[in-house]
Length: 260
Image 1 (cartoon, helix red, strand yellow):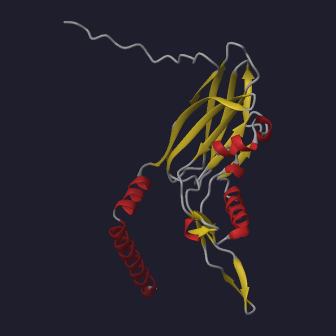
Image 2 (image 1 turned 45 degrees about the vertical axis):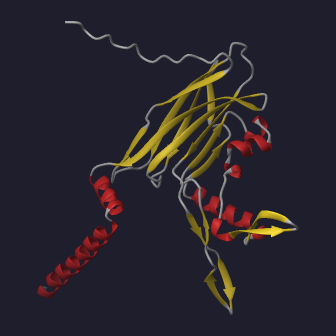
Image 3 (image 1 turned 30 degrees about the vertical axis):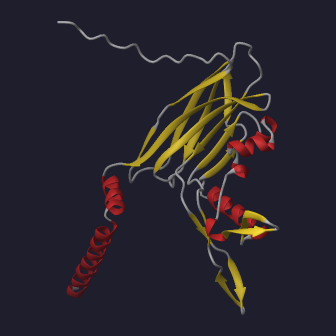
């Protein structure tokens, strides 16, 4: 009987030039009724034969969620909500950690291209946009929000920061030894369910020279997971069951208090 050969464990082989590698202490977070947040440690190493000065940026982006926001306006002496603005493509969670301030690591255009930092997050409000032809130029995108777009965008960021869902840490990546670094990812209790994309970027001379991607999965467990799947996969049945439970609870409460 021939014993099949066991393949050797995967070994990281550095790229010919400067490169970065990283791993997570926990790539799967299970959310139960007792969930009070989680802290995940990312650790990695920089490989560079010439030992040039390097910076590391870690970007964690949670599942995208549409954000509906409105503001108070005064009409005839009354304060009412304005027409809501819906931002699509905004991450439910976002964290940018770096070895020093991002503005000292790379240029504005480079950070914008990489979406590195809260100020460079792409957020669109498609319901407020339309395409027109202006001055003979076709396919010009015009926003109804106009100059107020930045104010609406800042409001979204303020709300997310207040809920601890958006964060920037200019000292979040710490080199603990030559070429070795670590970063901490704090997930609050309100962290959305889904897959989180973690990107580790190595910078040298203001340019990204190596990138690695890791995935964190946040999922419900136990009874919470069953209810979550039931509500999402059979929303109509879930609604009917919820109404029946509410009616039954009300009827039982009335019977108990009537006897007293």
